[in-house]
Length: 358
Image 1 (cartoon, helix red, strand yellow):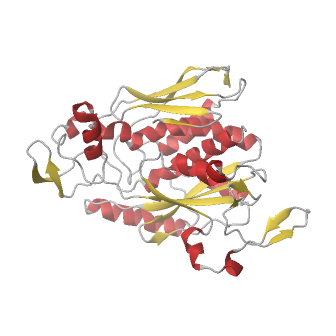
Image 2 (image 1 turned 120 degrees about the vertical axis):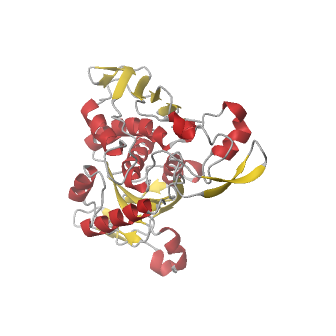
Image 3 (image 1 turned 45 degrees about the horizontal axis):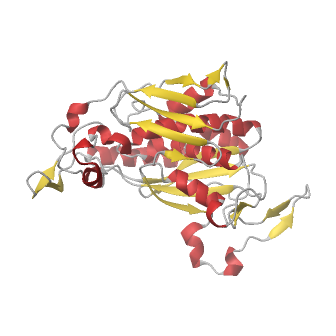
């Protein structure tokens, strides 16, 4: 359902056009710091309406903590936080209730929930529900930083345009700090400009484009994680697929590594100048048998093109049982990846923070 976590549990609630959306977090130790300014900073990076290449829906995404936090610290009970929706245009969806939008949840949701499904803005399946994930992730991020764990992301690609990848072996602390404050985080600014051009062109053509987000986690204790079903890859992947637009994930060399021989893929160990065991390469993405190797954990997630496009698309009319054509109105991101980076970062941070409580 809408719950994630083994030690610290978050539960997301609300719909895109409901009065509010929010999250409850259970299991945070009493005295855990909740830096509301830091939370606001993360929310601002995800908020809609702040960019020419994003949806025109204007939401301030101001977080209200209703319970569990006093004077900036948790008090041992459930933390509940909400974001009030203030700029929803429900009329945009009045004519398409029984005309499922291609690549949306509309058809399977209608079959499952019938007339009670809230179609407006995608209902509970909307990317709007990633905002509550960012609240929980922001709390995790600020507390991870205190213990030397860094989580950073950048837009690895948009369409065919690719950014410079993270170094698989170096921590890159300065780069992580720089990316953390960027609304459209890229390592190569020229690549970023080309990405924006690609997004703008797709929008002008009443279309959309997908992308890839790369994430890097440093500072994890060696041995963190479990074999089999509770490994770092398992936990992160489950969290990532809670982001509606994510359609794939790979760690380290990923699928490209399947084309190598063992002698090329294997990460050779060595002692560095401080006597710490490291690897010369990092094709494993910092994880072996579900456990952290002490090297940076690196993974990439594929973000599908926004399914809501203004071009005419073929669909069916469930009321008349006939084929038809649909033209989607409303305000939608021409590229979800442009705002997904901070969501991936927040989601990864919460997954790691939960793992560290074992």
